[in-house]
Amino acid sequence: MPDLPGLEADAAARHLAVLGLVPGGTDPDMPPGTLTLVLLGPAPGFWPAVSAEPEFADDLPDPLDRWSRRVIGRWACDLGAKAVFPFGGPPYRPFLRWAVGSGQAWPSPVGPLVHDRHGLMVSYRGALALKDALPRPATGPRPCETCAKPCLTACPVAAMGAHAYDVPACKAHLRTDAGRDCREGGCLVRRACPLGPAAGRDPAQSAFHMSSFLASP
Image 1 (cartoon, rainbow, N blue to C red):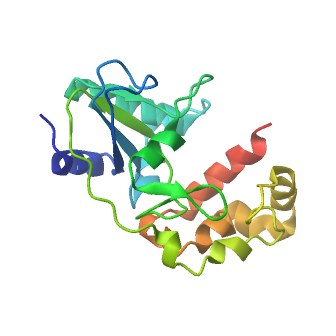
Image 2 (tube, helix red, strand yellow):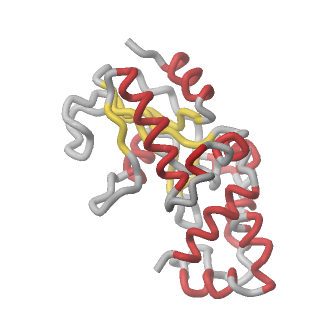
């Protein structure tokens, strides 16, 4: 039976981090027989390692998603588990709901989830659906409760704040010279979170995601 320390070590060997455990048993969106869902996301040092993998050299679409399917999928097979992913829909798996259900992520003052270790830089590459019941780690205080909340005023065009996210305004800014810092280094709102540096997010990874965001409808 897998345990959390072993899963964390196996995740680190794949440049991933365990970002939460979600109890299963009654969730219809999890594969049948799931008793624990293990949420996985990038660990510090993720991008230099993963961007050197074959999926990034074959000029085919969606290299990061294909890497995630290969690596997490093979790991799941080794464990006798199922791999599930936040992409590949519709329909899409409810990763945001699962993240909140882990007790390690919450809606932030600006809307996107904030993780207790990775802050607003949290992202999920997939999950392992285990047929074993693992205890969920104790959760600490929500980080935003004692934070000065610099995220609320970090957006230079006020596209993201206490109000609803203005996607057209965000994309318009990113396409300008003034938006170069966000475009190449990552969203200033996410970078303003004091917990963000713990995620070890490489600016090149943020630039990759920003490019994908700008190309989306």
